[in-house]
Structure formats: structure tokens, C-alpha cells
Image 1 (tube, rainbow, N blue to C red):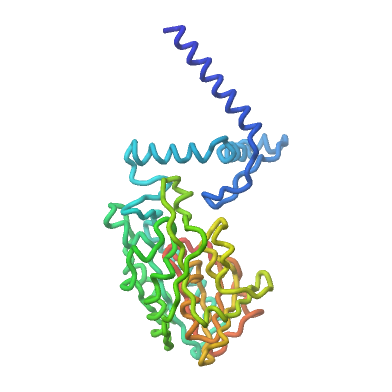
Image 2 (cartoon, rainbow, N blue to C red):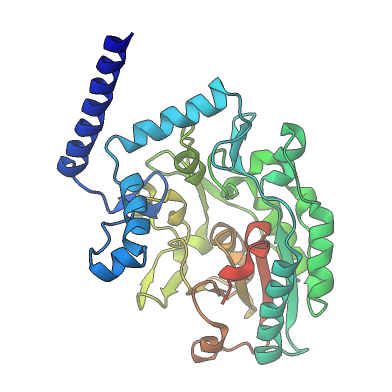
Amino acid sequence: MRKKNKVMCVLFACFLGLGFFLCILFPKEDYSYSERRKLAKMPELSLDSVLNGRFMTGFDSYAQDQFPFRESFRKLKAFSATEGFKRKDNHGIYETEGYACAMEYPVDEKSLDRASQRFRYIYDKYLSEENKVYLCVIPDKNCFLAPKSGHLSMDYPAFEKAMAEKMDFAQNISITHLLEQEDYYKTDTHWRQERITDVAAYLAECMGTSLKQDYQQKTAASDFLGVYAGQSALSLSPEPLYYLTNDAIEQAVVCNYETGKTQSVYDLSRAEGKDPYEIFLSGSVSLLTVENPLASSSKELVLFRDSFGSSIAPLILEGYSKITLADIRYIHPDYLEQYMDFTDCDVLFLYSTLVLNNSDTLK
């Protein structure tokens, strides 16, 4: 028994030594494409950082992020947790009926208050009774998946009602009755553009315009594997990425205020990038304008939105001569007056429950 213990100790020491040398020899990565986040770097070593504990805290994150074969170990851990120990989630992400979803519970009332206050600030600063102002709350996938999978779920009708009451200056447009779980990507947070044409038509109708809905469906060159696949490390299959087009979308002129350049509605080169969903209006951009040269009226829309707005804005474009998309997660509302004129514009606050329930991201 003593000899066996010695052998085990030697093997364990060899394992630690091998791990140490592999950590030194393996190339270091700056970014995790599966998790879509930057990886920790080696912290600066100094007497001050050692004494105040910053070095060891940073080194702990660095060692976890740069460990050799990290992705393989993450997948092994996810498999053992869900299949071996029968956990209902991994890193807060669960799978049911082939759909992956991050748990979102409970409702954060303070977050709803903060979101409504930021929107009211915009209304008081820029808008008047001459503007037609609307609110639309987009439910996340938990609305459809959590009850049937046995996970805790927010009261989504109460959530929407609370936001509508806090934003009494805006007309609420409810779209939950038009949505179902199949309208969302299986491996991502977002909705599928080809599945929300009815939502776009309903929004347009409620805002006093109409759409012909004569779209052509096209397929991106690469399949889509969403954010939940990497974050959960679960074995999830990719799915086709479709996008819709018509004459108005094809001829639209998009101005990206971050780059100062014009572009097309769909940036197909991003289909093979770190986030294929960014083919829709280049993803998370603080300020964009989309002009429709084929518009039959001079109606304009200002869309305050999160990333869900990137895929539905092209579908609504037919009803407007110009749509301005502002994402106040990345631009402070005080700067908007330098670029925008709100005179006689329709204004739509289109936000998912994921952002409204975590509104500290709003500036």
C-alpha cells in the first residue's frame, strides 16, 4: 500500500510538472471565439501588485484562461455535468428540445426603473407630442422554453405591463402572441429574420405604415453556431443562416457613423466571423442610418434598439424613407443631437427583456 501511494504521488507530481511546462510552451491566445470574449493576460509583476493581491487575482484568471487544451476540458466538464451528474444546466445555460437558452430570473424591478428613466430622459430631451412614440418589448427564449423544461421563468406579461406603465409617454405594441420558440435560433439569443416577417408587418401596421412583404430568402455561405454553443461548451449543432431581401433592401444606403463609411444592409463577410449574426447591419453599432430611395412617402423612423433590432429593421424599411438606429449601450443620449433630427419622426423603443432586465448596459 505504501509503495502504491508513492507511485501515485510521483505520477501526480509528473502530471503537475507536465502541466507547468505546457503552460509555458503553449502559445497564448488573446480571444476565445467560442465564448466570444477576450482572454486574461499575464498580469504585471511588481512588489506593489504582489502585496495588494492584484497579481495573484490576475494570475488566477490568466491561468484558467490560458490552460493547455482548455476547450477540451470545458467540453469534458460540460458533458460530465449534464450527462454524468444530470445537472439541468451548465454555466446557467440549459438545453431543451434542441434549443439552448440562458436562464433569466427573476425580474429586476430596479433595472426596469433604470431603463424607463433612460428612455424618459430621451423623450424629455428630444421628443414632443408631435412625435409618435412606441414601445415594443421582445421576450427572450425563456418565455417559451423555461416552463416546459422546469426552469424558473419570469412573468413575461407582467414584465411587459410594468414597462408599459413606466413608459406612459409611449404606445405599447405587444408582439408576444406572434412569437414561438421556433422563431429563435437554437444556439443563440436572437430571433430568426425569416421567421419574423409577421412581427415586422404588425409593427409597421401599428405605426401607421404597411409592408408588401415580397421578400426573397437567401442563405449565408456558412452555417450559424450561436453564442450559447461556446458559452455552455455543450455539443450543439450549427444551423443554416438565412436572410431576406427585396428591392428596397438591395438599394438601401447605410451610413455607419462609427466608420464614417456607407455600406450595404447585409455584410455577408461577417458570416464567417466571430459572430455570424453581425451580417445584419454589421451587428452592434452605436449609430446607423438606412435610407430607402424607393420610399413612396417621406416618413422617418428613429429606432432605439439592442441587437434584436438589427435583423428586423431591414424588414420595416419598405415603409419608411429613412430609419435611424441608435444603440444607447454604446453612445450616450447627449451626443445624439449632433447627428439626428427628431422633427416629425416616428420613434420606436424596441428592446429585449434580456437588456431591460440588465439595463446597467444603457448609458
